[in-house]
Length: 82
Image 1 (cartoon, rainbow, N blue to C red):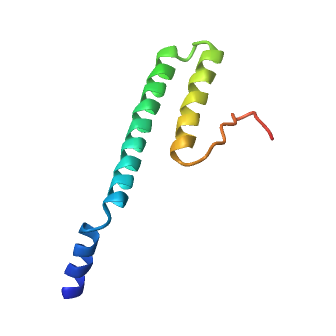
Image 2: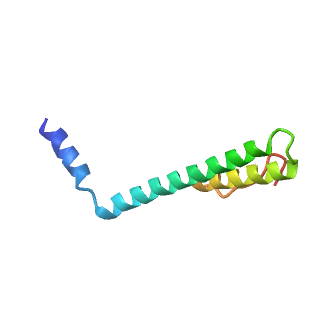
């Protein structure tokens, strides 16, 4: 049991810089999530018969935000080939 409480205490007293970095990462992901939710709402507003170019722009924007949050910079669309 002593080992468990020591391990827990060690985690609680981690470096302030690391705790701040973790909080910053969580805040960033929450922010990106909210932005992508807005993109989904914009897409839904356009409707099934909405302009394809507008829908594509919204989807590309959402994909770019998702790629940023997962560390990727690849923003190719479904038909793009490199």
